[in-house]
Length: 118
Image 1 (cartoon, one colour):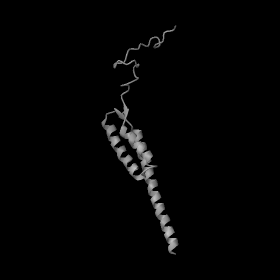
Image 2 (image 1 turned 30 degrees about the horizontal axis):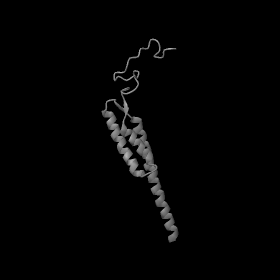
Image 3 (image 1 turned 45 degrees about the vertical axis):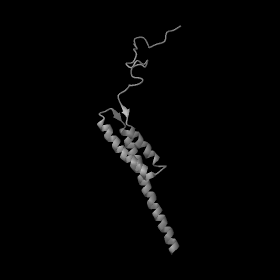
Image 4 (image 1 turned 180 degrees about the horizontal axis):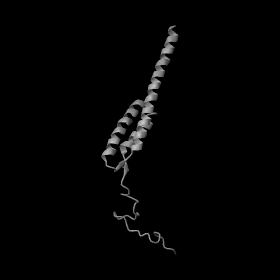
């Protein structure tokens, strides 16, 4: 029966926390984590297309700014700059589309009222 284990020349010692995970895997592996504010900002920006468009988009912009400050202050421990950038882009697109819809609605009302009055 063959013995299973690490390849020859690749020693494996238990992880410092006593688990059987090889180095670089399991709890405590890696040194960076994603900012939860950045994730929430992106989720709100995406959700702004379905519910409370302006409120969710503005909240996403505020959270993205806070996440950027949090990431900068973390000294490399936190990542998520790409998430905050995407949240900002999506939120601004949503706000622009919302403004366009308001203007289009106002023009439509003016046209309808102009036809009924004349």
